[in-house]
Image (cartoon, rainbow, N blue to C red; front, side, top):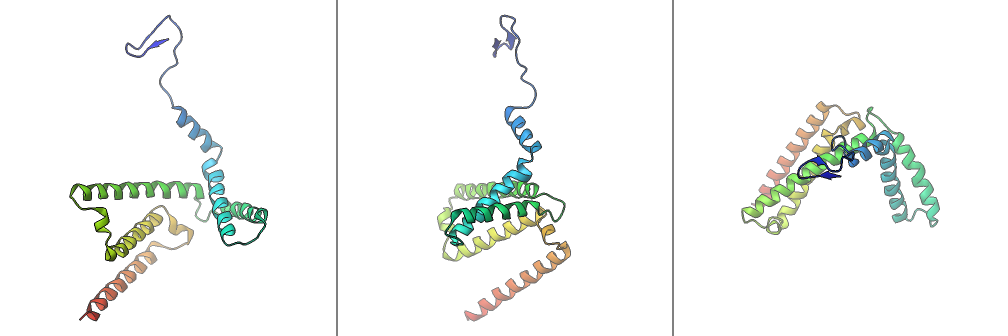
Length: 182
């Protein structure tokens, strides 16, 4: 036995060392070695998404036909590695970054609450569009930062140019909308 407070052996019995990886680390390491993240979870994610789309679209009345199609398409998807990065790595990075963005938004909402601003008041009719555009912009930045452009073979110079053009179009729309109100 082992006395936690004194950290001494009791009755001279062997004690398991408290060093080394935790059971969760061992499990995740084993899952990584078995390609769960690069194969199984990616396949399962796309199988479920494609099956749900086929079922919602009423592609076939036979659910087994939808299941077979989703099964095959999910295998084709996991075979697709356009930039040398597996889809599992891409999704791990994407969802990790999304979690950081969500945590940042939550902290922002907490600061607004401490300042006495209610989140519902911030979401007025006109602000919902602005917030949707902001969230869309954050999603695009997350996609680009995890290497998503490599899937489309688009160089960063082209993205910067397109971004500047879109920014100019939004500025023109904003100015034109202001002139219409006069």
